[in-house]
Structure formats: C-alpha cells, structure tokens
Image (cartoon, rainbow, N blue to C red):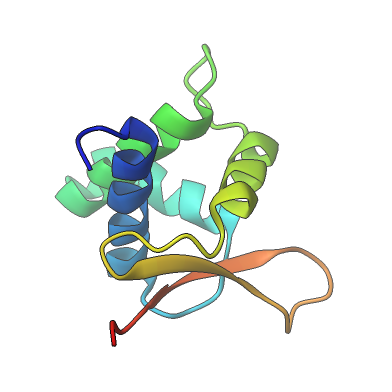
Length: 106
C-alpha cells in the first residue's frame, strides 16, 4: 500500500469513518461536523478523520469542501482496502448517505 498514496489515504479514511460511525449511513456534513469536534473532545479518532478530510477536500481557509469530498467518495465507492469499502445508502431520497462496510474475504 506504500506505493499508492491514494489507496493509503482511502484506507485510513475508511477505518476512521468505520470506527466513528460503524455501519450507520451518514451524511457527509455529519462526518465533517464530527471531525471538527477534535479540538473539543481531544479525540484521536476525530483527529485522524479530520486529517483525512483535509487531505481529500481541504480548502485554504481550513474548511472542508463537501462537494469535493462527496465526489471523492463516489469515485472510490466499492474499492476494497483493508477489508473495508464505501457503499452508498439507497434508502435516503434527499441527500446521499454513505457507510463503510466490512468485506469478508473468501
């Protein structure tokens, strides 16, 4: 995985997402909000999530571009890294919700 920085970032991001939200379908804005709480809670998991968000869709002003993050996740949906993959939740009609699911190897 060291040869592919994008794959490494995806793996770290999915692990932090999965640890924070489990299998619960989550809006991107809620993921960003949870990650922003890193300073308040001093939570290492939120810090890892924030670092990944910043690497993927960080703006110069310190914010996260939700559209860019959404497109990045969509582009990587279904890609398995370290036994995890992003899946779009189809039960929501309003906004896209995503979840990270564990993929059992055969």
